Amino acid sequence: MKQEIRELLETARNTLRFHERMGLGGIPLTGGIERFLTAAAPPPSPPRPPGPVAAKQPASTTPGGALYTPAPAAAINLPLSEIYQDLEGCTGCPLHENRRRIVPGCGPAGARLFIIEDQPAAAEEETGRPFAGEAGELLDKMLKAIDLDRTAVYLTSIVKCRPAEDREPNRAEIRTCLNFLARQIAAVNPVIICTMGPLAARVLTGNNQSLFRFRGRLHDFHTIPLIPSFHPGFLLKNPEMKKGSWADLQLIRKKID
Ligand code: SF4
Image (cartoon, rainbow, N blue to C red):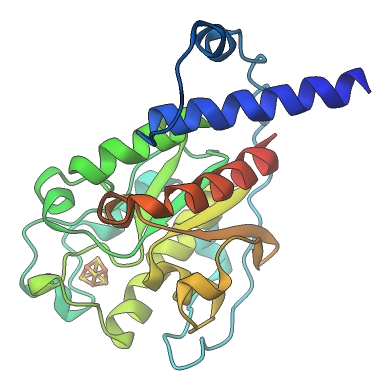
């Protein structure tokens, strides 16, 4: 019973901390609640030992969407640096024509959490890094709320070049670029994947419904658990959805633990 009460208190503390960090109002910060929030958090779980790189099996066609094309097995064990080399100057699809810079992705091999957004936007193209600008700052807060730092997470996108006028990439462009994503996932071999955005969710789950219909629960991506969630850029415009995002983050934390 004592253990259950401890867990209950820890969950309540984490929820309040998250709400406070995400700027959700309505918390009366009395002295008691402040002391409760600043109480020591449990020690972080030890890092996961590097596991074998699992070969990913070919997936089927996503309904009405792109064909997921994994890398040939021989290429699966390439280190991330070789994937980045292959990406340099890529002209594999028409998106290269208008791009200013490729946004390949970043993070450590062996990251336990692998986050995929839809496509680079202006801030990402400017910096060459996924989740840049204001949305990136919110992502950092969200990760902090579950005791993670972006340097421990692998971040990338479905396509690595920004489409002109931020249009959605077409099936052929997605299909061509997915080869890089498949190799990145295989090289990192994460414990859990989180898609942030409707396109990433559709492509990786093969579910063409609205994101609202299938987020909030775990899916399977070639035996890796996958949680579809909201992009921080969407949360900035729709702050009322932050509560749903918190539930997704808690699922991620549980899987990582
Ligand atoms: S979007 Fe991907 S496949 Fe297309 S040019 Fe850029 S890196 Fe190459």
